[in-house]
Image (cartoon, rainbow, N blue to C red; front, side, top):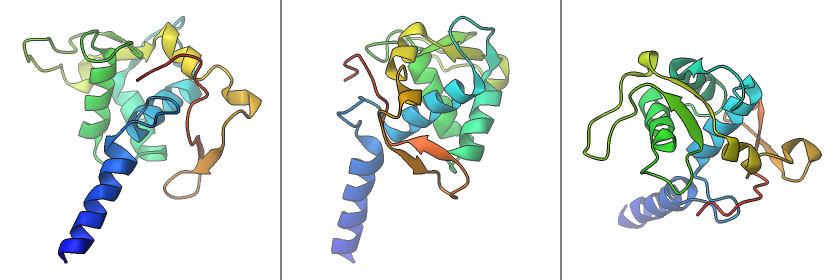
Length: 150
């Protein structure tokens, strides 16, 4: 039992908790950005409700709770959390002092300009696509990023 638990814990850490060095993203980050790309939620277009994006992500690519997805979006919209802000947020996304973000129904988001560079050559078949959790959609295995994101 001890060995099985350790094997499972290591697979979770390697598969979900550590960013992939090829694009610097964890699977949930990749799924959020890809869903925003599919929605056309671009930096030069109108903001969309965060809840809309969260719904698309959990419905198509990430069959887990909405909290994990929204927390990821919040982190990507905070200028103090990541090297590059990958999400341009409108509304309360928390503070350095530990104030939490507003509920997803009150915030709006779109991809930042730099997030487009992570997906610039996606349509040129530069990366492999894999099935989503139920085999109904395809998603990129990694992003064909042009910038270092670690």
